[in-house]
Length: 448
Image (cartoon, rainbow, N blue to C red; front, side, top):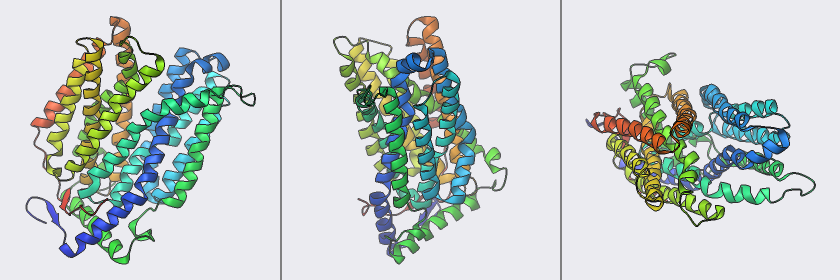
């Protein structure tokens, strides 16, 4: 290890490591991307059938809002236990278990006839889905060295953002099956999209491999080189941290800092998801379909940006802190600009906000993945994501209250901008020293 914290990899091992990671990128990440896209579709499809649930099941607007919130409660409560179980049983079994069970709950939602049933199933959906995204990040920790993790994270975040491009057309098409075989369109949405999750989960069981040692498509040299490097990184992190053990999850100051940062980031992300269409609707002369297409443009721009940044973040891992602060300031500029000018100016501002929000996530996640000690990384990542999702519950609530009391979205966007500015400036001014092993010198030009 050098004085700068870089782990040195012998040249004879670099080729085997890059080759092994390249195979993981080609064989495993596409499967994870598909799983994440389906996850986002299943999470958001309830918004497309709100009117039908009111008509067929008597679920009022207030009951619908409560059910939507109960999802996050179940998700937050079971996030950490789920990642602990994944560490015990392995990614292959646990990630597929999560996907199959959430698919079954989605299918059961097609039988809802009362608000109480709706509440129970939305809570159970959060329980079933808990641990999925942080589980994928922990999976990377078991497979991908720090030198390649920024790109890997960018790829799965692209899939998550890309789901917003598919969810509307897919769910809308299924809704057109209304009365086919005497079944309501909203029920078809639940049955087909939930059934698709179960099917893909079973396929993933045959594709995913929990550890490099279990991969038949790696040579003995590749297994040895990759496993040795990952163990070396874990050892370097454990020797650096002084809080290993049973209660480290609650006492690690860096982990608690990550929780706070991600909470503020998620406030921006979920507000964009929920209110971006409303802001775009101020543009005159477009049909509902046209507005849907406009809504997709900011996410497409964000996907391009986060993949570009993901490549560079692996080269400058010691600058992630400052890069994250800058990205959050970009998001803040976007949300502030959305309150000014004509609707088209606001649309451009939303593009800037989406880019800043998604790039922030790309720069953020390699930090806890690379720096938390092995003893707490699985529950630690889950705790960060869990608290972040509470930000997703908090932000729309405050945003909606401010809109109700002021009559416009301006107050909510100002509040959101303030939070992002404060966090972004703090990150830029805070001197961050990566833990030993947080980044290594490994050429990744062989990864394709």
